[in-house]
Amino acid sequence: MCSSDLSTISGNSIGSPSAPISLLGTGSAMGIYNANTIGANITGNSIKNISINNSTSAGSILGINVAAAISTNVINGNSVFSLSNNANNTSATTTAAIAGIQNISTISSISNNNIYSLTYGGATAAGTVHGIYNSGSVTSVNANLIYDLSASASTASIANGIYVNGGTSKYSNNLVRLGTASAVASPINGVYDVTG
Image (cartoon, rainbow, N blue to C red):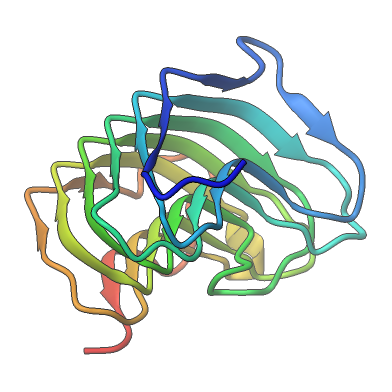
């Protein structure tokens, strides 16, 4: 289906309501993947209870991934939680072990999302967990709640509430609480801006 209008992805429940969906393959998993340049309004979705349990893979889990949009679309009011990855993934950017929300596009808003209980448990590789990964340009990254990000401390893994890797965006009124999970990464960063 082709359309010149924005798509709407709203009110969906993706993943298991209780016990995790466990993936044993070598690939990656995405709850919502928007790869068209028209974009989409992604609102009010729940992505939860998805895990990768193959320690021989380098797979990643992305709750919401917006890869190519150049539009006024938004990622607002979603809940992404209880994602876990035991793959030995060493990437720190777009193929990191876990990202609650990942944007590499030009969009209007990433706001009022709840992102929590993201867990990396690779035993032999230093992995990275991002609440929000953004290398695109967003008019407003606002009022997101990010907490309970954990990673295997024994492998010098990294947890970032918000990871800024490019683009021109405005970040305001986000609440990031880190360091309270049972396995705390080292280092942990509330907002990590690597591009200046």
